[in-house]
Image (cartoon, rainbow, N blue to C red; front, side):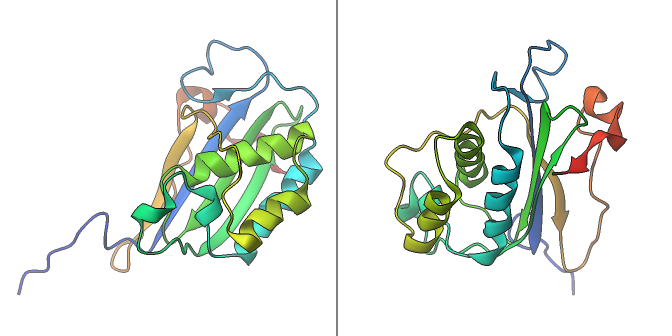
Amino acid sequence: MQEHHHARFDATARTYDYFLHTYKDPFLSSSSSLYLERNLNLSEMKRAVALLTRYNDYRAFCKTPDVYKTTICNVTSAQLFADANGDRLRFQISANRFLGRMIRITMGKLLDIGKGELSVDEFESYLITRQTPRLIEPAHPQGLYLSKVTYPYLDIAQRSDFSAIQQSRTDQWQPV
C-alpha cells in the first residue's frame, strides 16, 4: 500500500527564525528587518519570550482568530539571540502550529517591550485573557524564515544558512 504524505498537514512541529537589525545596512535589507531603535531592553524582551512556552492559546496574537476552529498552539521553545553589539537580533520559536501573522505580531509586541511602550505584565495579560490588543502591528515580513519542519517519518536538520550575510557569521548569535 502506497502512503500519501502531506507536507503541510503531516508536520508535527515547525521552527521559525526572525532576524532584525537596528542600523542601516543595505546588505541586510533583504534578509533582516530594519528597526532604527537604539538601546532595546533585551532583558525585558527575554522575560517576555520566556512566557511563550507557558501558554497555549494565542488568540490575542492573531489578526483574524475567528477563522480558526481553535487558536491553541503548543509552543515548545522560544529564544532570543543577539550579536555581540546587541544591534542584530534573532527570535526563534517552535510550535506544532502557528496562526496567521502570529510570529510577526508576537515580534511586534516584543519590540514594544524593548522600546518601553509595553510591559512584560501587559504582554502576559494578553496571553492570560486572550484579549486581542487594541492595536496590532505585525513586525515587518522581511527576516522571517521557516527554518525547520518536523515530520513523524522524516527528520531533516534545521537550516541555519538563511542568506549569505547570515551564513558568513553563523557563530555570532548568543542567547540574550
